[in-house]
Length: 332
Image 1 (cartoon, rainbow, N blue to C red):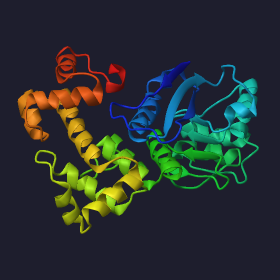
Image 2 (cartoon, rainbow, N blue to C red; image 1 turned 30 degrees about the vertical axis):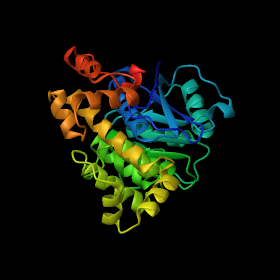
Image 3 (cartoon, rainbow, N blue to C red; image 1 turned 180 degrees about the vertical axis):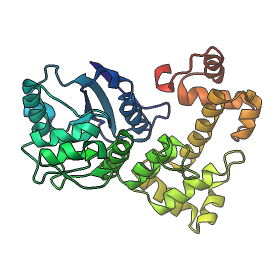
């Protein structure tokens, strides 16, 4: 069994509410599927990079392992049965009972590929309808499962869902992100992991989090995009407010009320986030990076960088050259 606690990346925001933990259990029926199940881990790792009020953990296990049947344990948990398009999910008699318990207790379950055939074991299913891969059409018909003829199927009761393939399972997971956190975050995540083309101006994790926190407020979104487009030569607040057709006071108050942070503080953090990325992923000299992020000198960048991240630009760069790149969260 593998257990992953997927922490947020280096961009840290002030927490305005207690962080919530959400647990994902990924079940395998084939030891060879262990590698492909890392797709799920990477999905929720990416989600943790973008979401600020939840932390997702992933546990990868086999259906034959012992587990708790306590309904309280499964409250709020998601169970993913990670099948493929080549093998139907066969269970021994004792495993069928275990699978039925999981499907009936978990708040949300997803059956992938050949695992969709397990739907026959769920007493919670109101209608025997699922996303069935063509390879399993005959088997599904034999046990009374109807094919929805779509890559994914969300059950009306919101409990047991299905995806015909592993790729469509990721798309289904993104739909659940939209239900849980809003469409803006889901769309940001899709672009972040390559399910869709990323939208211009959404490359910043900090920006995505603030836009999400604001409820995708139009003014917040516009001013953040304006700041991202003017990192090298930062604009004054009066210039930002004029570009948005608002007074300086109105813009500052709106931004603070919607995000919980000050506009100027955010602008500085966006520039430092860009500097961190350039240090980590490019060979640009620090002097050029300071110019590219609107700081007057490398020393000015260094002072701001240490205050924000409790480390130095030199430390981040030395890790890069040493082949020891880590999320900044590990540096604290």
